[in-house]
Length: 259
Image (tube, rainbow, N blue to C red; front, side, top):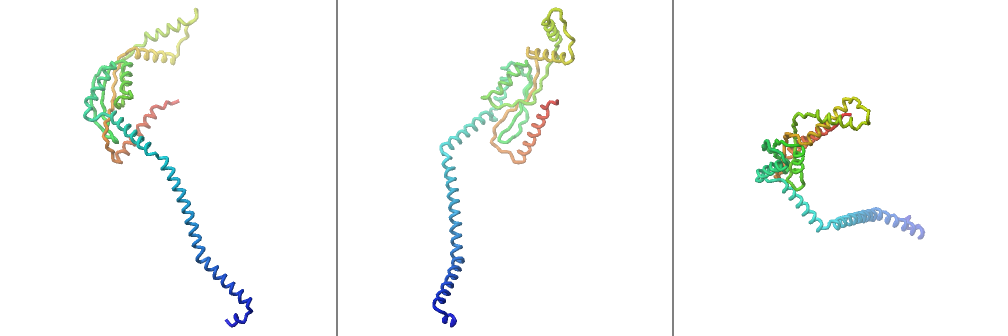
């Protein structure tokens, strides 16, 4: 302290100024700097929150309450329309009777109608109606189209098997040969037909006989669906999905034609 007192006044002032500057610097870095950093962080957070708020406000503005109500109502109406397409348990007898009447109206003769064992699905139940009918190809197609109409109850035809009688295609194949001969210029003769051409004529003749009204016997399962509103347990849903995937794979493999 004595050494400081002996110094000239200008030096004393310089030392005091330097000391005060050091103290001010220490105070700034220890107190002011953290506060400034906190302020910057708060400002950044406020900016991000404003941006998020503007985004939410735009999304809220895009969600028009009236349109949401209309959309919900449309979905409810669509659900009701699907439920209406699925007969209730009390309507099953009437529905099966209607299915039989549809077959008869198409010109088919009912050989047998039998109700199969119901099986539960997710929110609905399916019941197979095993039917055997006889009639022509056109009558069978007419029945299939009738049950597939948009406004009818949901019916899924599966396991279709058709039995046709032995067809005598000889007269038709002879007619095809005569038609070819008559179309040739005078003096020309037909070349012998190869095996492929003979088979094509045979298929053409069989198709013509079937379309003309050959009596067929068809057996199939008409699956009817009942709305239950009950969701299956997760393990049962997984099992059904696995079975459906396997059936789809099998069908795909059957439809593949080797080159």
